[in-house]
Length: 193
Image 1 (cartoon, rainbow, N blue to C red):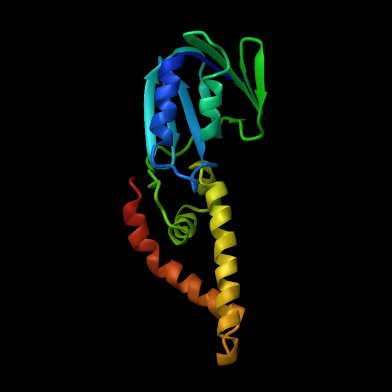
Image 2 (cartoon, one colour):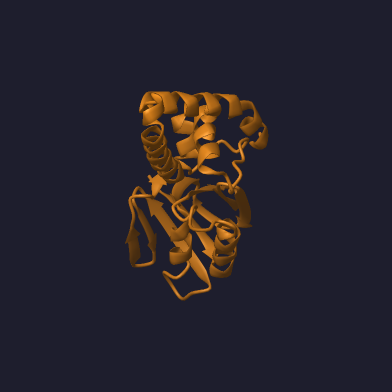
């Protein structure tokens, strides 16, 4: 199985710039989805969507790291790039790039638009709202993993600081969980559906 299309190099660079704008260091590991159908390719990353005309060879969907899009545009010096995506590989002519982040068949739910500038707390609330699989499908997995590490560190620091007052790590965790539960409605309103 593969997804393949021809795209103008300048268009791919434009799409990368659109997806990369406002991404910052927190979003450098975000995943982008490319849905190729008819005569278009729709590129989606958290908070951003871009569409462009392509020559479809094999329709389908592919998910990859946003940063990889910029590298792909440099695979060949030609005005048009014929890209072939297979599980873990993108090929352009004789050049192949292997990355574990390249997966086929993952189509994000286009009814959901996740803002790009979510705090760690909001990211964890979004995961609670969407569920792990749907959040992963939106390209948020690496950001959510980082947010969980930050939360665990903050919980440990808070419980250590409050130990003299009889507050343990479980108590702090319950407090954070309750705050996330309270924030679900407000955060859900910020997700475009």
